[in-house]
Amino acid sequence: MPRHRISARVQGPAARLAWFLVYLGVLLVPLLLTWTVVGSPGTAPGEAIALSAGLVSFSALVVAVALPARLPRLIATFGIETVLAIHRLIAIVAVALVLLHAAAVLVVDPRGFSILDLRLTTWAARAAITSTAALLLVVLLAIRRPRRLPRYEGWRLLHNGLVAIVVVTAWLHVWWLGHLVSHPLLAAWFVGSGLLLAALAARRWILLPIRARKYAYVVETVRPVPGDGVTLTILADGHAGLPFDAGQFAWLKIGSTPFVFEEHPFSIASTAEHPERIEFTIKALGDFTELLGALRPGRRVFLDGPYGGFTIEGYDDVPGFVLIAAGVGITPLLSMLRTLADRGDRRRHRLIVAARTEDQLMLRPEIGQLRTRLNLKVVEVLSRPAADWTGETGRIDGRLLGRYLPRRPHRLHYFICGPPSMVGAVSTELAELGVPLRKIHTERFGAV
Image 1 (cartoon, rainbow, N blue to C red):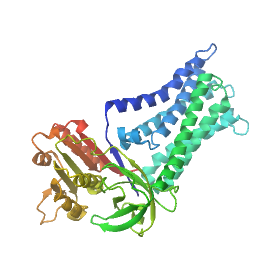
Image 2: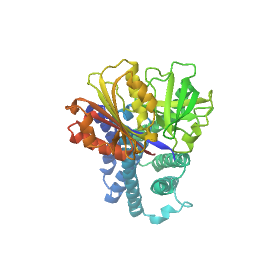
Image 3: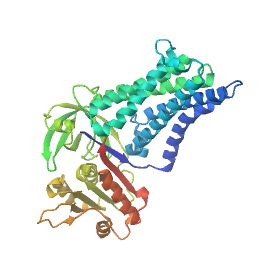
Image 4: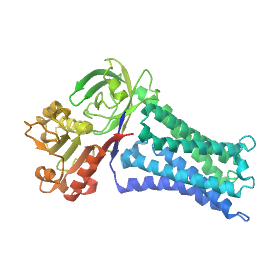
C-alpha cells in the first residue's frame, strides 16, 4: 500500500493566527448572520436549532474541503500533518451538526418522517437526503478503511466522489429551500462559499495539472538502492526546472497527461541548487512504488509541487543542523545535505541514521560522498546489528543524543524524519535535553 509522508513545521505565530482567523470566520460568520433570521418574531426554538445547525454544518463542510486543497502557504505554515488532523476534526464536527440539523427538522416539520419519502417530498429535501446519505457513507468507509486496507487509488477516487456529492447536494438543498437565500447577507455568504469551493476545485483539478504540464520531466534513470528501494532521476523537459526548497516534496504522476488521477507524494532527495535534475529515492511499499522500477528512460512524468515547510531555508544564522532519520526518512535530509554541500556550507552538522539491520541503511554511498564535502558527523544506529557491527546499537534515545550533541544543544536546529513513533520519541528526548520546540522540525511517514 502506498505510503504518505506528512510534515509539520510552524512558520511563526502571525501566520498561524491569520489562517486560524480565516477559517474561524468561515465557520462562525454564517452563525452570526443567522441571528437576523432566528431573531425574527415567531421563530420557534426547534426551528432556530435546525437553522443554526444546518448553516454551521455547511460552513464546516466548506472548511473541511478547503483544508486539503493543496494551498502551499497553508501547508508551509502548519505542515500537512496538522492540516489533515484539523480536516478530520472539522469533518467530525460537520457530521455531528448535520445529524443535529436532521433531527431538529424531523421534530419541527409538520410532515414528520414523511419528508423522507423521495417520491412525495420536495427537491430541497431530496438534496438533503442525498447529501446526508453520502456523508454517512464517507464516514463508514473511513472507519472501515484501516481494517479492510483497500487499494489507495480506488479508495481515494470513491472518497473524493462522495465528498463532491455531499457538498453539491448540500448547496442545492439550501438554494432550493429558498428561505435563507432570501436574506441578502446570507445569500451573499452562501453564494460566496459556493464560488470559493468551485474556485478551489478548478485550481486543484485544472490549473495545477496545467502547471504540471508546463514543468514536465522525463525519466533519466531508475536504479535499485540498498534497503529495498529505487532512485528515480528525472530531467526537466524543455524548461529550467521546478524551483523547490531542500526538504520539500511533490506529488508524482506517471502518464501521457498530467490530468491522470493516480499520483503519490514523495520527498525530493536531490539538491535544490539544480532543480533541472530531480531525484526521488522511494522504498517499495505498494503497487505504485513497485511500478516505478519498471519505468524506462525517456518516459514523461509530471510533478505537482513543491509543498511543505520541512526545510532548512531561513536558518543561515544558526551554528549547524542535527538531522535525524529512520529508514526512507533519510530522503529529505539527503536533499538538505546535498544543497548545503553545493552552497559550500562550512558549519558543523550532525546526521544520525537508524535502521533495523545494516543492509537497511539507505543511501550510505551518497552520504559517504557528502562527508568529503561537508563538516559532517555521521552516526549509524542499528536495532538488530550483526555480530561484527562496530557502530551504535539500540535506538535513538536521550543517552545516545547526549553523547553526540554539543554541550549547548538549544543553539542548533533539529530535523527529524521517520515513522511516527520514532519521530515522537526523539522529539520528546530533545525537549527533555532543553531544546526549544520551535527548533524541532518533524516529518512523519505513515499510511494516507
